[in-house]
Image (cartoon, rainbow, N blue to C red; front, side, top):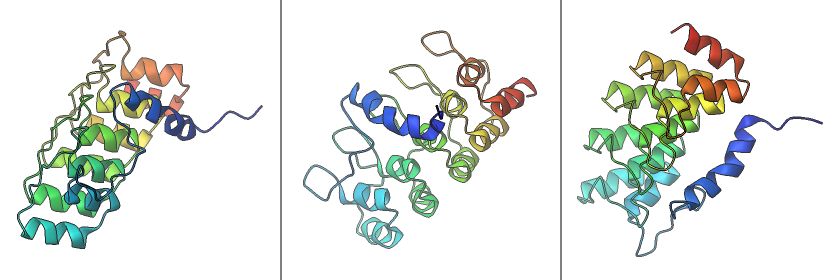
Amino acid sequence: MKTPHPRSVYLLLLPAMLLLVGCSAEQPATADTDTPELIVAAERGDTLRIETLLAAHDPVDSRDSCQWTPLMKAALNGHSQAADRLIRAGAGLDLADKGGYTALMLAASNNHAELVKSLLAQGANPNLQESTKGWTALIWAAKQGHLESVAALIEGGATIGITDFAGETARSWAGKNHHLEVIRLLDNS
């Protein structure tokens, strides 16, 4: 029996995990009255629209009903140019949604390593813990086996030994999921 790719398993589980806090990353933003246009543009990576909205003084940290910001949507989808533009406009790097997820956690959990590096270089805190399981960006990346993001987070100052609410660390999650390269990297850091 073929073992499913870890990212496939993650993508199947993410909606269920986010539904626990009442919001879903898989449900795309739409241009309705509840979702600010800047969030929709960021989710799509539409830098031209982002530029227009920012020039019209749309709030860079506008929120939807789940407390997502434009930067979170750009990070989730790996839209580096959109994220960079939002950061230059003053987007809050460590703002969190209803579940305590930050842009850095969303980028790391989806292995957008270049975006992880950019967020860290701008001052994002790598050691914040989300409020549902106590996972940090490093725990997310290690659990998923995202070697590039794990390396970026370690280089960016992530604390390796932080435990989640169940007492697990990035190392123990990598071990449970048989991510040998991640284990080696964590053990040698």
